[in-house]
Image (cartoon, rainbow, N blue to C red; front, top):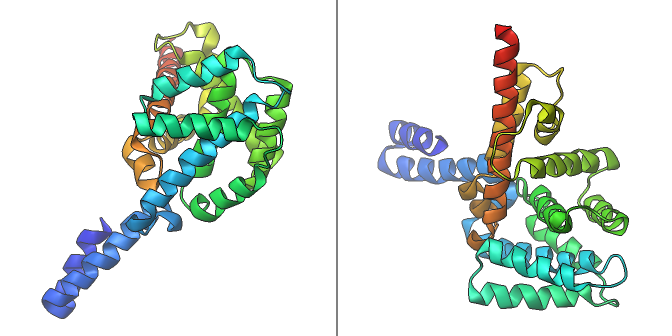
Length: 261
């Protein structure tokens, strides 16, 4: 949008060269609006992708080791997670190596988290998306262990989330996972649907639609890739978007029936 406005205004006031300058300024503003100040420079996208992948799998290794040992089930879950992503052979090998690095009992993850903040911290949603990936990984065996939750809280703290903000993200992802089958749940799951969107039964239709649109925008593949999520790691976000859609459909159907009764 800003590109078009920039071209029109630039051409109107300064002719052809003004249109070129207007286009460049408009592109800057468009990227700022879509991705945040951290995503303005498209040349830094490869670096953000590399740091995102590195931090995700190092953190996963640390998460798997959180309870003191890594079980075969946890190793299998990581393999399944990587397969679910459909990663390239190169990224798959890199992910496994990073996971092992993070799982080392003597490995200090704090420098990696600081590096992530420095490179990706000013880009919309990347901090929250990394937390989502880690929560999904922790949920891969059906529940989150207390030691895993402690580590997730610590990662969230490094990213600037207080306990209330972290709990809201955790509740949303936990409840989104209840709709992973893609089948419309029964009406008894309505409370979970509200929590999946981060709203409540008392929320207005407008508030619910706004929360739904925000989540769908957050999980949008093009926006995530533009911010720095590697293309072959988009599958998790796509799955989350499907779960949000099912939860939202349940809420809207319930409210329509309520109005009709």
